[in-house]
Image 1 (spheres, rainbow, N blue to C red):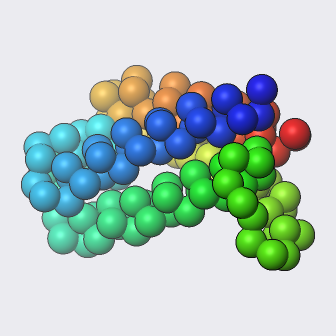
Image 2 (image 1 turned 120 degrees about the vertical axis):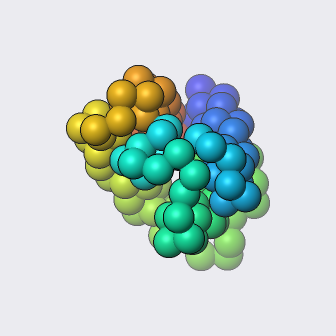
Image 3 (image 1 turned 90 degrees about the vertical axis):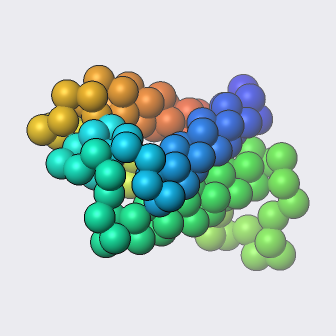
Length: 126
C-alpha cells in the first residue's frame, strides 16, 4: 500500500510541478495559487513557484525512498523524520488553501493537498 501511495504522490507532485512551471512562464492561472490575488504572477511569486518545484521533487524522492521504491542514501535515519515533516508541511498547506480568499484555489487545491496529505500519512506509517 505504501508503494502505491508513494507512486500516486509522485504523480500528483509532478502535475503540481507542471502547474507551477506554467505559472513561472506567465500562464494566467494565478487565481489557483499563492492566494489567488494575481492571474499572472509577479516576479517574487514566480520565484516562489520555482522553489515549490524543487520542494515537490525533494518530497517525492523522500517518500519514494521511505516506501522502498528508491535506494536510500547510506544513512537512512533521517528519512522517517523527513516524511513526518512533509506531513506537517502538507497539513499546513490544507489549512492555508482552505482559508484562501480565492474560491478557485479553495475548490481545487484544498482537496488536492488533502489527498497528498493522506498519501503521505500512508507512507509515513509504513
